[in-house]
Image (cartoon, rainbow, N blue to C red; front, side):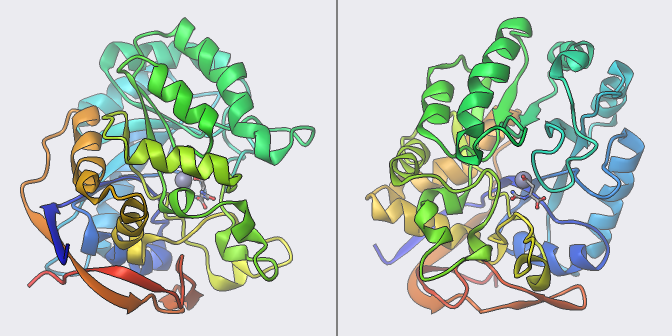
Length: 346
Ligand code: NCD
Ligand code: ZN
């Protein structure tokens, strides 16, 4: 196959930050994707509808002229979120989910939820109104091994949640384990998952190949090869429960290459090409379009995009860095070749 034309994709899990970082990060995504679910973990977090709508305006203002892109906004769930906030969000028509960050789980999660049971009135309102719950599925606590956090979350938090609030539509974000694949596959249709390019392509060995590799560090952390295989098998299975969510999470180079490096891979500059490479590695390029452009829209109840993009079988090298908010940023796969290249829109 020398080229692949498909429906323009969407990114169902994206961090674009704010201010100068937003202006630097956003064009990389808008080049590739028609829409993206925008994560609310700013400082301070986007906890209210009014804040989300203001953030949406800043995103639209940061879009380079001539680029079409629709930000799909989310709210950051806290212990104090009121059920009425769900009504305001839903009634705005511009907010598409509420995000769970267990307190302490990841970047800017300090204001996150300390005990999900406190949020049950909010979650029940979400189930009534059809608001999607986006879940960072890791338990926290220094006593828990970082590589076990997702699997334990499924047992300790997710299974009880689904039993207690059965109608809730939820997305287990950026899944990384066989346990998550099995759980989502076996759950009812209201349960889905997003999958990142790094969890399709890399196992935890990539954190240590030839030395410590901070640009491969994200949360949930990369897992063993058997888990990567399970995650890639899910992405390429054709199941409508699995769809594209890059979790592209920009951090400046100096914040990654640090004594205490930030978690997050900046995959936006080559996102689609990275997924294409992963799908091709298991002979599943024919399933890329459904994963990237159909399943997410269907799950969120949004129309599929009508425009198209084309990937060309043309080797190129991912740049080593890009400008970023007064400094630079290193993309995922920096300096390495990719066999597929997104054709520039004419
Ligand atoms: C994300 C970030 O930097 O905001 N980091 C990451 O490693 N994925 C937060 C998150 O999604 O966990
Ligand atoms: Zn994320």
